[in-house]
Image 1 (cartoon, rainbow, N blue to C red):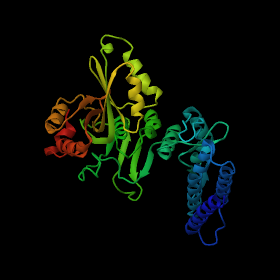
Image 2 (cartoon, one colour):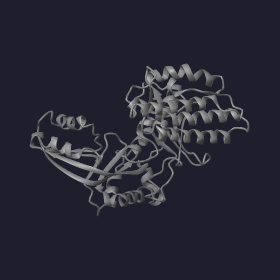
Image 3 (cartoon, one colour):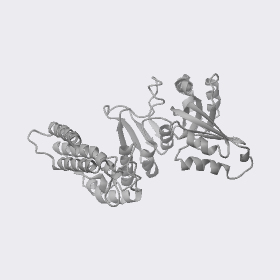
Image 4 (tube, rainbow, N blue to C red):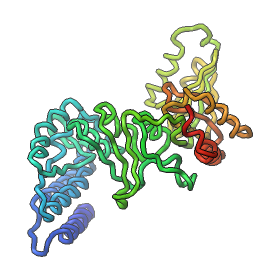
Length: 399
């Protein structure tokens, strides 16, 4: 108890110091901030009393960081003379009770946003609310998990049919490759929603795919901007782009594991793939890339998946080969499949690389390659050179 209480007190002191620095000398303590402090102390005391935090209580405790930051920001905006309304996100972001990674109820969010936010905006007030935080229908605090603050912005922006959702982060938007791998990676001004989702799913760190989905469906543009460079470059993610480019970017992810499942039972037999994917579903494992042959299926999964358990269960009805320490490299572009020259140029640039799997995605937006992990960065650099550094950037604007 003393240690937990001591940590809470440290947090409170630090935030009071920030509040004093932001507000004019002599400004009394902000009542909203003090209420959050009291709530944090009570939640931590409850966890100590019960010998640990339940998932529900853990979310309640975790929410206080956002709630303190929001109270500070709202107070500072008022100090600057703005008309501000602080709206508790738990009033508008309705979720289920999957604590730690709650799933939002977008129909309820649309109704609650209209009820608690729209009128304030219409009257010209600035509305400040938390990201990452929501609540169940019976009022229990939840959190949205990875990318939760961006997700909140997209959910609320979609509910409001906003002109734009801005995501402020530590990069100036999307680049044609990871600049840590390709120092000369180029800024990309416009990216389609499909391309952004593929980039995120295949390793780009700018956005988590789920965070932009509400905006995708509401056709609300999303811009990705650098917090410390407000006047710098940025990327606009929109439902469609007019530019007829074949390749937008190169992304990669590693380590991954490839499972190849072989069985003569696949030949002209219905239901085999259903049985195969049922194994992955029951182990809650997401499959990234799938390639099929007459009697074999190759699938890629993240290396932290329960590989041994999957292999044991699959071995009951097929032969399983497991190959670890591989990398997934992807070319991303809305019109990849329509280009007649992308695939030949890929093969030419990687003629001496052991490409173990090459497949187009189910849509037009990605061409995926599986290569040894030791070759991952070299492959990314070669592909970037081929499609972005050749004369006139021919690969970017193929039709």
